[in-house]
Amino acid sequence: MKKENWKELPIGCVNVHPGNSRENLTGTWRSGLKPEFIEETCIHCMFCWLYCPHFAIVVEDGVMKAINYNYCTGCGLCAEECPTKPKSIVMVKEEVKLAEGGKK
Amino acid sequence: MKMLKPLNGNQTIAEAARQVDPDVIAAYPITPSTAIVESIAQFKADGLITGEFVCPESEHSAMSVCIGAASAGGRVMTATCSQGLALMWEMLYIAAGLRLPIVAGIANRALSAPINIHGDHSDTMGARDSGWIHLYSENCQEAYDNFIQAFRIAEHMDVRTPVFVGLDGFIISHSVEVIQVEDDAEVKKFIGEYKPVYSLLDMTRKITVGPLDFTDYYFEHKRSQIEGIEKAPAVIEQVGKEFGQKFGRAYGFFEEYKMNDAEMAIVVMSSAAGTGKDAVDELRQEGLKIGLLKPRVFRPFPYQKMAEALKRMKAIAVLDRASSPGAYGAPLFTEIRNALYDCTERPKVVNYVYGLGGRDIKAEHFKEVGAKLEKIRKTGKVDEMCGYLNLRES
Image (cartoon, rainbow over all chains, first blue to last red; front, top):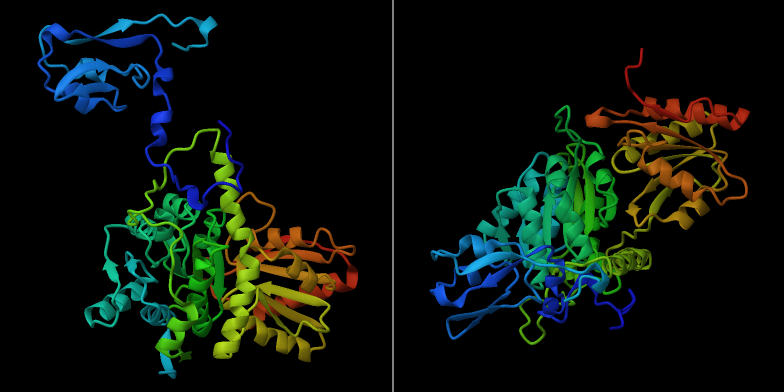
């Protein structure tokens, strides 16, 4: 995508395309750990959805469906807050191959 | 109705604010600018202003409210000084970066430590890289005139940059002078209707204000911000001229006093310039070819015009009411010396820091400077580049 030069930008750093932070794939920040969703024990309490700072919890009709790894930074908050025993989200090791430039 | 009124500096700012009647005024009291806020609160209580008057819990919050209100599309002002301005610091940069035309009346006061409530320019000089336009006033009339013009300058579509209007704490803020207050309707007509570029309340054109920039956009946005203040000189000049045509008191970037045939000049801002002019009169009677230049606009600094006005001088003394510890000279001095660098025959320029914490500056101190300039003019030699006036040194 061509980036605007300074003369083309709206003044005052105003973003005239609100919501475009979804183009910023924060999942690329993840290093080493990722959450894994265990559907069987999930009670759909929405704690993970509430605490996730990057809107990476996919919910449909009040049901926790999955984790969107395009945005998940692997911070672990969802796993920490998950109240079920055993936990329905656990952090697992994730191999990132340097040769792939960290892209998944 | 146009009339003469006895007002102190703070009241002149409040009077101008009443006439402008901004959509939102958010301010926190601090000596010596408290009376600006107090008078505005009274106007609000008396139903003389229609705008919202917000009393937040600190100056940081006051500027935050201003930024929010201006982002929502309102015409906005505040007033503060010293520690209050210092507490606003991070928000000052945000106001300028977001290109919000906020106007702030500043009753210039010293910064702690040691704590001191009296007048000097440490507060606004400390904020000189925050991106705000700086206007300084010699007296109550200039404070009133500058404050009205500040809205026109800040809100010009080419500029869209916040403006400080400085008036010396106590010396001007608390001194009563009879000033010409213009007609309410004429003032309103002069500043015109305010049209925001963007408004958070405009649901037909949704925007985000203040989102995160990474390394790929921050630099471009900063360059775009600088463009506003760089376009300000033409606007400041035009507004000053129009103000003169309408109200009879024209303004430029600086005032020149007895500079026509002068070979030496004293450069000094704000209230001290009044005393300086008296001293120049006395020095003239003693045969010294000396004049005075009083800068009104410090940011954007009028380099070319300043160099043009000063290049014929043999010796110049720049008087700063602020220090810049560790720098080679105080703020005004470094700007002026820089402005003169490209002259073919550079005048000798010396710097005196004066009046910190409200220390008095009298005609005798200006005359001391005059004598030193005369010596430099005769010998072409500078013994001391940066010194102090009226300081106990031995």
